[in-house]
Amino acid sequence: MSKIIDINFKPTLYKYKKPFHITGSISYEAKNLEIIIKTKSGAEGYGEVSPSWRVNGESIDIIISLEKKVKEVLIGEEVRNWRRILEIIDTFKSTPGLKSALGFAVIDAFCVECGISVWEFFGGYTDNIETDKTVSIGEVDEMVEDAIKINKEGFGKIKIKVGENLLKDIEAVYEISKKTKAEYIVDANMGYLPKEAVYFAKKLYSLGVDISLFEQPVNFVDIEGLKYVRYNSPYPVCADESLKTRYDAKKLAKEEAVDFFNIKLGKSGISDALSIVEIAKSFNIGLMIGCFSESSIGVNQSIHFACGIGGFKYVDLDSHLMLDEKEYRGKFIQKKNKIFVKK
Ligand code: MN
Image 1 (tube, rainbow, N blue to C red):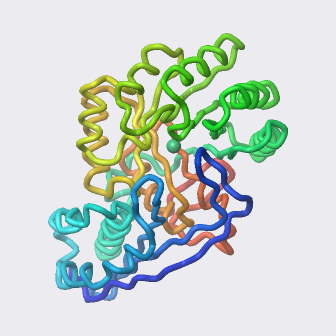
Image 2: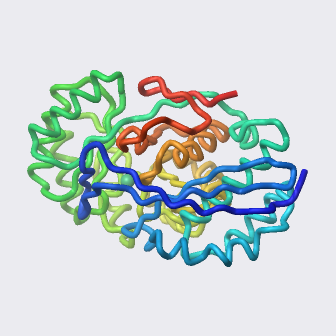
């Protein structure tokens, strides 16, 4: 076991294969940053942050400005003291994506030194998970076409982005449900008012559409609104933008506001994500894992976390499938919708 001797910040740029449109935002590219941690014994750990201004108020410039501070507090630390290191990393409160990349890179380096994989470190629950793939907002015909294509590629779970136009959204989800055979996760990314969300859900239910998960129907601050949707709509409600820290999880659980938590390492960092899992278990709240615009090296973090911990009923780890990336570099193998960790 040895000390951290260097931390490398490496900015990267990826283009989306097709512009990714969700409520209030269209992404054409992802400006990410890789973290490479080197230890004295020669081990290397890899992390990646895909900063989200929309969700976290985090940007690539802010992250780069913290390089000196990161080196100052982490170089010299022993990777086997990873829990103590996570406490140090947690002091970077305003950059949760950076926290997740640093935390993962430390644990990755520690695992290299131990000769184990990160999914084994987190618990070794399962060596594979099944991801959905996402249909972004577009014209109804275009969304249906995308959903059919995703279904034909072998995905049995389809995530549908809605939230900008209530009546068109209902039509799009209804048409997709008629033309594909899949489980549907619908994500409004905070786009509806509580009453609109309930109208949306009741209307689709009356049309016979089965939705597995209704993700973040209302604004992230509106916990009462989430609860209103949960108790007045037939579909399970999942918190995404409302759930960043362990304190958010505690509040959502105490308020009985949601049925599921969508954990993203980029919103929480490793230590809060670990806490959120336990809070979810304590309150019988279901688990989902999601991502931002990470490349394969960043999605790798969430894959190993989810496989190791286990119990993630819904997996939305498809950002690397949407980016134009020359080759996948994570320690996993992608076979259509199935992801296997390398052993
Ligand atoms: Mn979401």
